[in-house]
Length: 121
Image (cartoon, rainbow, N blue to C red; front, side, top):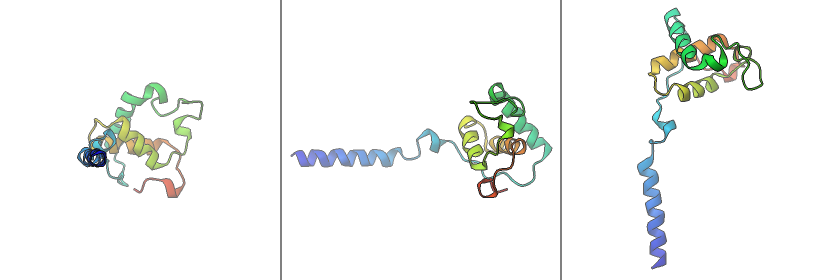
């Protein structure tokens, strides 16, 4: 009898994992595609506007404020994948286009990261 209870518990856990797939907060936030090579002024302006609304208090309007004891954001070489992860988390309530605009803006104000870690344009 105990073996069948263990089996049912394992089966229930497995089915829960299958049923819950895709409902985590990380999976729920859509991932924007890599930013396009053309950075239109309107797109950069939207990205800056959204960044200023949500992030300037700690990072400054152009990333000029030191944060967390390290150098200012605009003095760092931040890999594109790190920027994308941060934007997807902080701006998960925004559209793909809005998140892409923020990513493009951040890539425009940070130092270039090594080629292997930059977001493909």
